[in-house]
Length: 192
Image 1 (cartoon, rainbow, N blue to C red):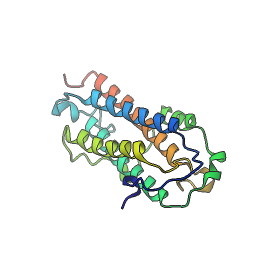
Image 2 (cartoon, rainbow, N blue to C red):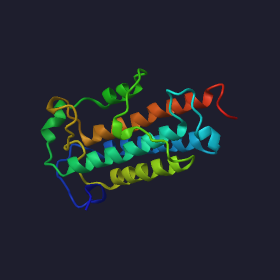
Image 3 (cartoon, rainbow, N blue to C red):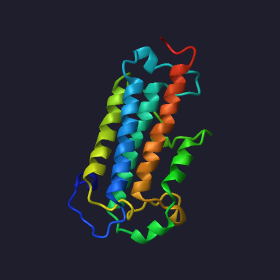
């Protein structure tokens, strides 16, 4: 059974609070609803519009976000099977560090496993994204895990981040791509 679908684990003296849970849920829901708003009623031509050969279509952006829904869910699932390490919380970076990183306007390079292939058409990209996002939101709503006591191993021991921080990166990443979608839609050649 996946840890992301399980709520049987309970930990006393949790560092992760109900306020933390609310913060993640509100931001994951907010970004999900904004994605829906920005892609509602797009035509097939609008989904497939590219500013130039170096840019992604809105469909590819949604596919990329949908891939990250699965990547981050899997990363959290794996790390929740590890022993809690609450002592690492004192070394953790604040949420604003991750939000500022995602707000940095300099280009980021997608990992190979999150590069969109562009095979899905139109609204299928939104369906793909929403399936993963709704799964993560339901997990955050119902988990009894202390998400500030389980850490990822990205970038080595000195830069580990909690599952809570992973989810902050996640909604920040969505905000980053929402800006990209808005730029694409405001392009003078965007189909009307």
